[in-house]
Image (cartoon, rainbow, N blue to C red; front, side, top):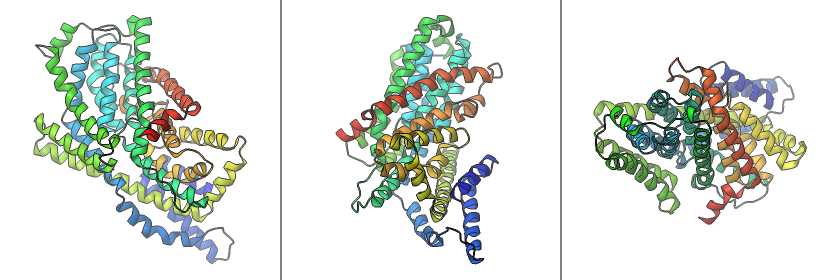
Length: 463
């Protein structure tokens, strides 16, 4: 029954029904089936008492201080998108690096990194970079595969570089799973895992990926100059309608987002603020930037508020549906079933971790990171953590795994985002070809993390 419930949810989601209602509706249907069979005298391993915990679960979700970071980080990201910070930043970077071989590609990676650290929203980053940089790259003679692959891969950095919405949600789910795992092991004063721990743990792997992307673009440009030719700086300046020294534009484009990132991440790393408090700092900073750039009219503010409310409502409704799904899954004994399955796998904890990573990667083709975080992680997380897996390492591995599934053809979400803003002259196969080297780089990062867990755990232990 637990596996039937899981596959039923996946099937309903693939039919295109809303995620939150699919989770809650399927779970309620299975709960009703359990009660009905028991009333008919059929021996079904269903513990209905789990359902009485639902009101407390709902109250816990709506009063969760950690999850308050979600609307604030979303607000920050949408404000930065509307204030066109990315446009100024990309112009400055293009003028700075454009005259080098592969310079426009390197500019895209650097701007994408700063956008990821500013907004934390993959879709917004991919679409923004696609609209702003792809036409310039194609016009300058860049290979469509290299241009689209670079934009897609850079956009997915929002999954791993903090402050990331994915890490906020993953941190909350893993924190509950970690406490549950310790209680199952008889540890009555459990250690805690915070979103800040995941933010700090993601810094080194995220920066390594950025460096790897830049090295790859530079290497391709050096070996095949025709696919990433240098741009003429004077032509670029005429195209951007910019006359004067480069440095004022660079300072104008670079300093505001960097100051915002320092304010958000610096307050967390320095111990001055929790991620939730830092998200408020970020939202206020984005508001100040929008005001300073004179981009904040009343219609824009209404649009920002509407978008933020829409995304936040979606996330919390999915949380409620996932909580109901989790309770029904446990009521049918799903937790014990998963534990027995993992213990029976060859290779012990290594075999179990490999299977979980493979399942998450495959589910990334059909489900968004929010659904995977709230459906899969609560099921497998407590079991893996009880087997001795480090929670920070597991969180970063899952985040990079989901980032890779965002890129993988034919169903990667980043590919769909970019396809929507790419001209018809660029075939879809070019986008698929372009992302393959970046997928290999991300898989290499997963392998490096598996061999050297300290890449994720060392910095949190020091700080």
